[in-house]
Amino acid sequence: MISFHQVDAISGSSCLSVAGDGNCPSYHHGCIHNSCGDPTNPPKDLDAGALFVLKSKGSWLHCGYHLTTSIVAPVLLSLPYAMGLLGWVAGVVWLALAALVTFYSYNLLSLVLEHHAKLGHRHLRFRDMATHILGPGWGRYFVGPLQFVICYGAVIVCSLLGGQSLKFIYLLYRPNGGMQLYQFIIMFGVLLLFLAQIPSFHSLRHINLVSLVLCLAYSACAAAGSIHIGSSSKAPPKDYSLSDDRANRLFGAFNGISIIATTYASGIIPEIQATIAPPVTGKMFKGLCICYTVIILTYFSVGISGYWAFGNDAQASVLSNFIDGDNPLLPTWFLLMTNVFTLTQLAAVGVVYLQPTNEVLEGFFANPKKDPFSLRNTIPSGVLGTGSSRAVSSVRQMVLDTKTYHLFANV
Image 1 (tube, one colour):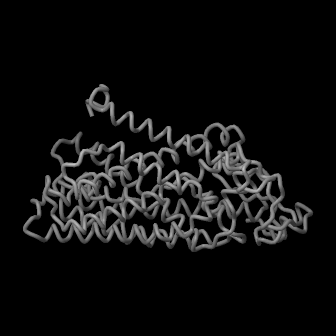
Image 2: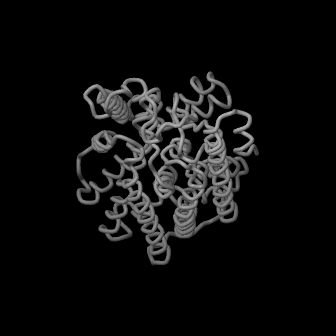
Image 3: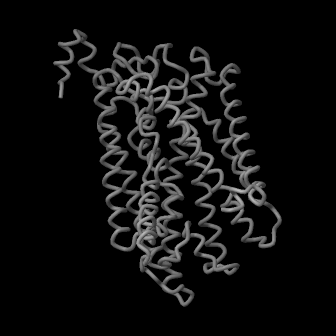
């Protein structure tokens, strides 16, 4: 690896010898270059998306909160179902292997970003890194749009799951209630619309700390509920056998592996690292250690306890196994508490994955030379609100059409 003194000799710049130490970064088009400007007051040629949304003010603790919220989400409640498709040995092995591979991958990615930061090019976004490595065409027309679609798709999924959680809570107290799922999806969408007005990724640090606590809470509830039901007289017959049909077993294994891989996924690693105040060296690794400590506590406890309790009868969400028909197998207050924890964390996950959307909209419509709270720069929030409302409206129409539209009717 090139040392700072070698880089300094090659470039002829005295400032480069301390690149990455936080004393002399400057910014240009989403990358930090070397000049002796004040890191808290970057030059005005930094685009509004990076300037307003990706403020580099956080610590490694804040990084850990952001990473945990971007990875540990209520989708982990599907791990017992995934293990049912794989069996005991393969399920536990894939859970552990996915943890090792993703930790190594995310850490390697953070080291690449740190290396470029030391050389004077701190990439703040995935597309900036893709542009530098693959070329401007790949960054602008492939990686950037792909990340945008994935992140905004995650927001829509959070809206759907949030609506389902709200409806579940509603039906606990009004089993014969007439409200429809789309109404709860719209309610959750309004909550996300409100949270979307939070000005920067760094501003989410307190929300994401609460999110970290919530994911530990509902995971503990899911594990405790599974153990209680599995050891009671209400426990269903436990069947851990795999399908006798070779094709079904093979496709089930691929399905289980894909579910496990999805639970470990995060599409905003560079954006999270961009929130760290310089110097960035070593901070991302500490944040990943926080995140994966939470992952080990939650994923393995929920996956193993849920599969032990329900076997091959584990549902897509283990919380669905807590109700047998119309009869709850656990106290109503416990089910309510678990779903409130899940619902609240879904809101945090949704607003985290809105950040790339916010950054793009700010970059297109905001003026970096004006105050972020000026009237001129409130336009992106309005555009985002309109887009979110249209997405929720589209989902509502899909729900209304499920009984008549051929594709959804077959599902």
